[in-house]
Each structure stands twice: as C-alpha cells, then as structure tokens.
Length: 293
Length: 320
Image (tube, rainbow over all chains, first blue to last red; front, side, top):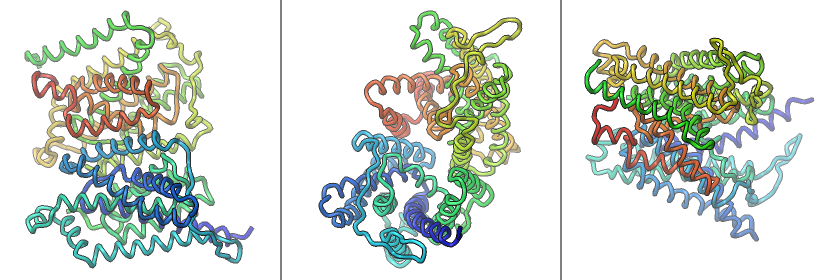
C-alpha cells in the first residue's frame, strides 16, 4: 500500500487536533501566566462550551448554519460569564494560594461535570456542521469544514497575539503578570484583570469546543483529554509563552495524529505523558519559557 | 517523650482503636463491611497525610502507590498463585520501589510542578493498567477466587471471606499505621517535616538534607498507601483500573482535607465522614461526585483546617 495518502491524512488530522489544542492550551497558559494558578477545571469549560453549543444549535435546528454561528457567539459568552462568577466567588477569596486554588478547581471540575450530567444526560450529541463541501485531494476527498476549523484557529491566534503584544489591554495583562504589586501601585485594577483573564481563558476553551463539536460530539466526560493534553502543551511550550504554546501544540497534535494512525493510541498517550513529566523535571521552564524568577 | 501531653495523646489513640475493636460486636452486617473498608481506605489517607499534611507536599499521584499495592498483591495471587502473606509482601514491596523511583525523580521539582509531575506519573500507571489488559483485564478488573483468599500463618488458618477475619485484619493494619505515624510525628523526623512545610530554605540552611527527608516521607507514605492497596485487593477480592485513576488520588486528598491535614486522626475521621456522606448521597442521586466537588470547594473556602485541625486549634492543643 502507498504511504502517501496515509501520511497526508495523518497530517490533516494532526493539524486539526493541533488547531483546537492550541486554542485550549492558550487559555490555560494565559491563566497560569498572568494569575499563577493552575486551573484544573479548564477541561470542563471546554466541555461546557460544547454542551451549550449543542443547546443553542438545537434551538435553531431548522437552519444549521445560523445555529452554529449563534452558538459560536453565545457559548463563549455564557462560559466566560460562568468562569467570571467562579473566579469572583471562589478563587478571589482564596487569595490565589496555589494549592488551595488547585483543590478548589478540582471541586469546580466535579461540580460542573456532574451538573451537566444531571441536566444534559450521559448521551453524546452532535451539532450539525454549518456547511458541507469536500476538498478533493489526489487520493481522497477531505471535509472542508475541518479546513475551516484550522483557518479559524489561525485567525483567532492572530487576534490573541495582536491583543497581547500591541494593545493597551495586553500591556496591562503583561504588567500584572510581571509584577503584581507594582502594577497595583500604578493603578491597574489587578483583581478585575484577574477576573477577566480567567473568563478569557475559559472563553478560548469554549470557542475551541464549539469549533470541534460538529466533528466530535458533545459529551459530559469530554473535558479530561483536552485538559491533560493542554497541560502537556503548556509545559513543553514553556508557561506563558505564546510561541511555545503554538509550536508545542503543533508537535503534540501532529505526533498524536501520526502515532495514533500507526501505533496504539494508549501507548502513544503513555509515552507522551511520561516524556512531559520528564521535561518538567529536567527543564522546568519548558522549551521556550523564561526561567522563573 | 513521656510528657503529660504524650500520655493523653497516646491514650486517645488507644481509645479510638479499642472502640473500633468493640464496635464490631454491635454493628449490623452492612456497616460492619463498610467500617472494614473505611479502615483500609483510612490507612491510604493516613499515608497520604504524612506527605501532604506534615511535609506540605501536594501529590496528585497517590493512586499510583495504592494501585502498585493493589496490582502487586492481586496479580501475584491471581496469576502466580502466591499465598496471601506472600502477595501482601509483594504488593507492599512494589509500592516501596515505586515510591522510591517516583520520589527520586519528582522531588527534583516543587510546588505546582511537583503536583503535575506526580499526576502525570499516576496517569502513565493508569494507562499502563489499561494497556496490559491481557493480565489486568483493564476496567473490568479481576475478581479473586475464594481459594486465593485462604492462608495459614504461624499454624493458624485464616479465611478472608469471613467478615470477622477481614474486619480484624483491617483493624490490625490501621493500628500499625497509627503507631508508625504517631511515632514519626512525635519524633525528630516529624518535626523536621513540619519545618520543611513551613520554611524549606531555612531548614536547608540549618543543615538538614531536605531532599533526603522529603524522600523518606514520600517512601513511607507511598509504602503505607501500597499496604492499603494490597489489603484492599486481598480483603475485598477485586483488582481494577479504576483504583489507579486520578479520581482515587483526589479521594485521598479529600479525606485528608476533610478530617484535617497534619493531624494523626484527621484522615480516619475524614474517611468515615466522606464515606457515609457519599453513601447517603448516592441513595438520592447517581451524581455523587457533585457532593465531592462541593465538599472540596466548601473545605478550602470555609474550613481549611478540617475537623480535627479545627478542634486542635480551638480546644485541644495537645493533639498530635
């Protein structure tokens, strides 16, 4: 058999995975970078995004495209609002103590997951893609929607990069990240910034989920895998480094695509998890991160 | 060592053990089994607490050590036909080796990185238990045959299918763990562990080899957790992947936090409280993890010292 079509398919699937992963991991990295807390509930915000997308789309089931684009607006907004409420009600009161926030976000993980289980049920449900067309490659046709997801992720990354590096908003975030006390002294409302950053991180995960839900279905347990993969990406890429996050997501997404096509997916996961643990032990700042001060 | 506070504390622990012994004669069958299970889980939580409560190291990978014991004992008994004592030693031994190895690598990190590294090692172990499904039967798990649960020791024969035997073996393990933890905590090692928890750089500066002390705490903690795992496999005759999942590491953390981290009896009390809370909740809803989640949030927000921790702070300052 020819190797070419296999490799192309693995690459395309890997790119799709990398696109979604970059957005999810960027959310986690933003929260960790600015607030210095590990958000274990990040995967659940992703799951919430997908479930709310299903709910929104089912309201407008007569027109799949309108339903999808409505979901793309409503789902991140709702998830952002929930994340903002969690931050104000719980994390703020813990004064961002690293261990207490980990325990609290584990609690949030269970609460969100089980609430969705009660309200939405254990079924996996699909959202219809907004459009169908096939891109014809020499060997096979490929879903045009998948390519749209990759393009959308690249566009969103561009916007994030612009906001973080060129705007006043990004400057405020970087100042807060660099030195909380000094930022406060210069009149930056650090508490507010934390609330918005936490919400923005969750919204990125929700957007990624809305994009993926026409391809993979919405399910109440779908949050764990993206959470672990995002951890891996954020650690390998170096915490708080946008460039590192993108490159690491590409490496992980592509290698996952290729290894899963040729080997056992469980073995692939075992190896990558072990490698990450070792990266963290021997090079804690990651591949592109600055050494912690 | 024989100060009045020591006598009082030792007496209290003796009283707790004695009441657990007496309790078995009055409990109905369901609660008899439940308490036996709780005592084994409490050994796990007490082992966890030595690391988290006293040394201040938050590990999210203790399911790895519990599972090392579970599989170390379960697989040798199931596939190789080892007798119960030999399987128990094998399980506890694999936990010792696993914690030594994990400790040597993961203790190079600290804080959040330590938490993530331990979680990832545990995740690898969990995936491995699924990958080698030919031997472990993965999620479905192995059920020990009754023949593998009878053994003879010092001329007496024991049958682990008998509830009374199970209860008393669990109680014996709990007693042993309490004595070990009590001795460590009251001794110099316990004081240095607390010193590391409160201020590691200063402890290092005073000339203590903090890496070595932390490793010692992790190995004792991991071995005790593995002992609980081995006992679980042999006493309750089930070995499965779910015991290696992240959920199980979090349970140990939850039991410890609820009862009071950094107290000897806290994890036991936390296990009892959480076990019955979930037991009662699951009568009403299948989503009992909701209770777990709400308990975790409420604990860190309003009750960070846990039950025994709060009692110690307010009223009984001599509690170890």
